[in-house]
Length: 193
Image (tube, rainbow, N blue to C red; front, top):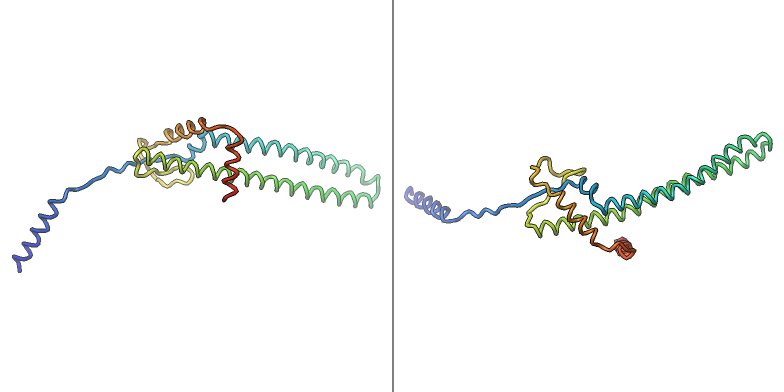
């Protein structure tokens, strides 16, 4: 019995010594996503576009609000001169206008959020696809993301490829045509979703 155990142990040892250990180097890196979105030119352009739209549409709405405030101030001075019936009617009209302006502000805010959200989702999807392709092309096993939604608690800075990704994305964005055709394609993609 002892001989059998010794023979089995020796044969297991011999088999295990014959196997060569295959160690594949795992290439990893990480991207600081908050820095990426701050420095990526397309993301900056998208933010500027919606900021300009918000300011333009906000100016139009602000003009209506200013007119309303002037009418409300005039109402105060004219209420005593025109009597109680006039004051009640005009007060109801002003209240209705105030409510409509509030709804208009809310609708404008929601519209801009929805429009920018669709484009931002498209941009983020494109960045993820780009990073995936970049990883495959450059032989990475893993590329992690840090930033606002951090999934890494610590990483050595030598594994940070954020600047490489930003440069490559910005180069790709500069090479793309800046026509309405690109916007039409994005709208078509959004409509499919």
